[in-house]
Length: 151
Image (cartoon, rainbow, N blue to C red; front, side, top):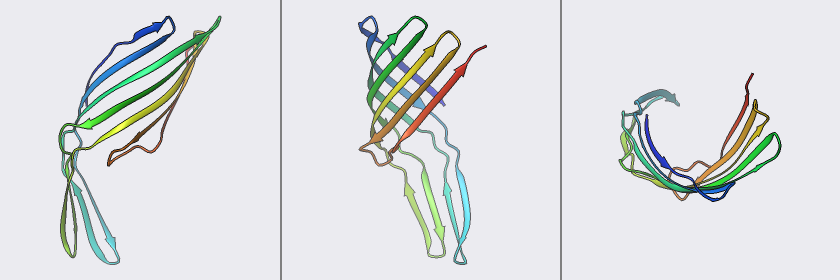
């Protein structure tokens, strides 16, 4: 997967910023085949290989709060993600025949909020929530949590 991303923070104050973003992603998805039995009938589903190209444009805003030996950064973002090429094709085959489903382009709105904390020089943790909406394929809720201790 190849990612080309441009994001430059524009500082509103010393500890608050707005960050416009643009991103282009190119990848490779290998095909898969699944075979199973449903009430004695053989069923096969096969995806072909495809190369997605996805664009994203958005903006993040954030603010940092700090003390003597700690720093907390809160941020929120909104963006639009869109497919530039059609997705791969899926073939479903059973005793009644074959059904071909063409992957079509889709677009969705992305929303996220996150919090990162640095405590002393060696302890960091973060928590981020993400959701997408208004597309055919959406992420209902995604949570990313991280913890880092350096020694």
